[in-house]
Amino acid sequence: MRIITVLSMITLDEVMQAPGGPKEDTSGGFKIGGWTEPYGDEVGGKVVQKELQETSDYLLGRNTFEIWEDYWPNHSDFWPGINEGTKYVMSNTRKESNWKNTVFINSLAEIKKLKNSIGPNIQVWGSSKLIQQLLKNDLVDELKLKIYPITLGEGKKLFSYGQIPLAFTLTESIVTSTGVIIAYYKRA
Image (cartoon, rainbow, N blue to C red; front, top):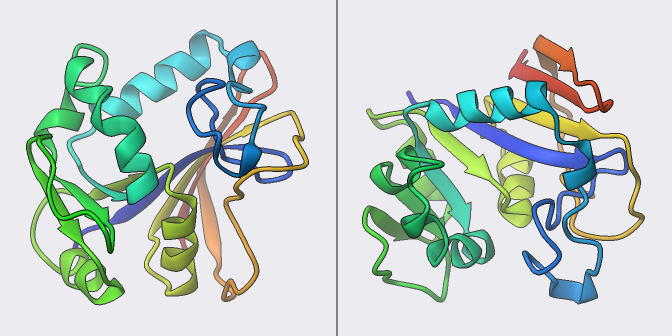
């Protein structure tokens, strides 16, 4: 069985939309992208680099995939594994991509089958709607959260209504010099 790990940068009010830049994801009129930048430090950078070095496959929602599809194939020096790992993309509208190792899926049944297959563990980045469906269907094994000391009041959130009760155990935590809480949880 493969482990599904959600990696997310969130604000105190659970916003996860467009942490990297103002044009990253403006859907819904979101204008506050790039909110993580003032909080970068050496500790946080090392944690991210370690996460990016993990051998993994990736499970992505279509919107996140389309943001990444033109960027990451040309930036493998920063994240070598993203091009080599298989990208499983949940989509009802897309069927193909020129980005190597991309497979389109369109149901939770396919995710369950994938989870029960043999292969590398699976990381989920971005993909708020997909994460909410995974949580609602008890398919998340680990959460690797970076919680930023800021509230935005609007934007896509990590959790939404309709979640089922789930328990997690804290396995690792650190606070950066800029107040970002990095917390790793496993399903209890």
